[in-house]
Image (cartoon, rainbow, N blue to C red):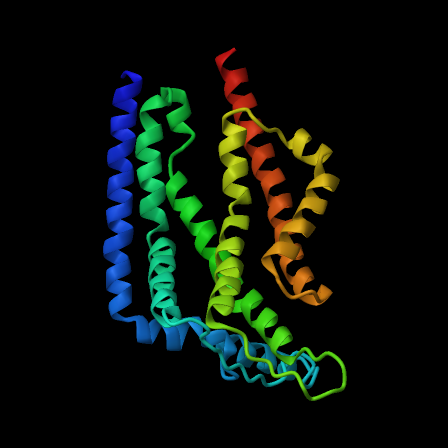
Length: 269
């Protein structure tokens, strides 16, 4: 194919992806009240499932109320005329992107697939499934673990002794923080899938990952600080530890890929 033909193919992939996002966003917009009350504002309610599970776990292992988070009160404000409407559009679009993540990956894959050689295609079986699975696990981790920790900490954080400060964040600020946490965690959890793909392509090796482990840990700390707007070390450790585990899993995945490739080479030789 010529360069223009590639652009034409890419254009249709983009058009289909955009149409999917817009149509599904319209569907989500129809149910915007349910999304806002039950999903978006879920981590701010004191009866949110994560709070109840942590508190029940604390009691069951004999720690009393150690893991029970303090009750929180969060009221949001709108500071612009179109704030409510624009926030509804943001919620619908982000919900569409999250739910449609596998389809968007599939469109990207359909564009890239013709450029791959037969032996490269063999190493990409199930790629969309694993990429989507890790993304959804990460997004769920961000929503059910990171978001409750972050919002509970920020809502109960006090500065000074004067009672002149009233905690009332804007709706747009709350949504931005919520989206950063959820999508950021979803993308961060793509480490194992990225390791599998790059190892099959020969771009990284387990030795490379081990050699740069200490630098990777520093990068993961920075990522944790970005994902969690909460400055307390506890919330950041909750993010860092899973990322460190994912990095170590990525090393194991890369080592397994390299062993399989070496075995095949020996058999061919």
